[in-house]
Each structure stands twice: as C-alpha cells, then as structure tokens.
Amino acid sequence: MRFSIGELATAVHGKLSLGSLPPLAGQFEPVKRIVVESRRVQTGDVFWALAVPGLDGAHTAEDAYLRGALGVVVSGRHVEPWAGRFCIRVPDANLALAELAAVRQEIKQRGSIRNLEQADTTELVQAMLAGYAVTLEHVIEKLSRSVVTYVTQALR
Image 1: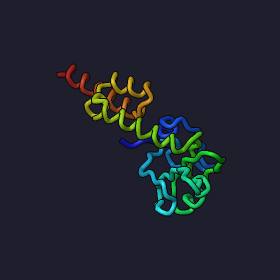
Image 2 (image 1 turned 90 degrees about the vertical axis):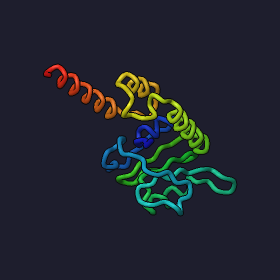
Image 3 (image 1 turned 180 degrees about the vertical axis):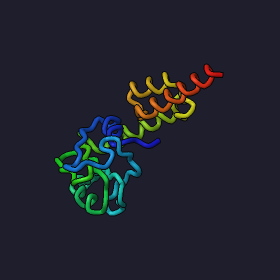
Image 4 (image 1 turned 45 degrees about the vertical axis):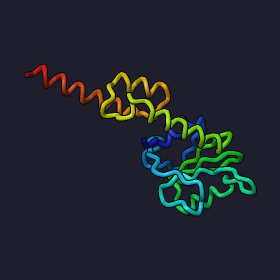
C-alpha cells in the first residue's frame, strides 16, 4: 500500500514542511520508495535519516536532495525542504520507521481494507478516521460507483 506525503507524516506523527514550491500534488503526492542510505537515493525517493552509532543521518539530508530525493524524514535538527520537495520532522527517526512498519503491518492484517476494491464505503470511512492510509479519493470513488450502480438498477 502506498502512502501520500501527508499520510506518511500522519502515520509517523511527524511535522510536514513543503518546499517554497511544493511537490506537484502537494501533501497528496504519493511516496514511491523509502531509502535509508543517502548514497542509494534515486529521483523521487524518500530518504529516511536514521541515527546510527557514529553517524546522524539528518546531516546527509542535503546530499539526498542533491541526489534527487523527493523528501526526507529527519530528527534532531531542522532541514529546510528544497523547492518541489518536502521534509517530515519527527522526534526520533528510528522509532518513526518502526511505527511506519507497524502501521503497514496493521493495514495488511485488516481484511476490510486489504483490498480497497472490495471494501464498502463505511469500511473505508472507518479506516480513514482510524488513521489508516485510506484517502478521501478512495471513499469518493467508491461512493461514485455505488451511486452509478443504484441509478442504473433503478432505471431498469
């Protein structure tokens, strides 16, 4: 399941900052890949600045932007997002990554939202209100299909 930038920030209890010229879809921009080593960053990745003994990943955030990172997740210091990019500040980047893994696991375990195509509108709204990575777009799409189906059947 893919998160948007805004959903990622919510899932890890982080503070989202967008660059002066935000990503194309703003907070709804999808997150494609998360990388924890700045040297492996490719265009569009999110760099997760882990703190490991002898190295604070937050100090390599600018390197990640240079290599094309769409955004960075950092703790311990302020990183100003570049134009078209974002930054999520969290109290502890290592713990935040563990929280994200737990959220993803919980989403996979919930059969009602494992497959968004099979979820009904009520399940989608409940999942969204519970903080799961379900966007309003999913709910609107499901509602639209339900209304079209109802009208089509009513006209028969």
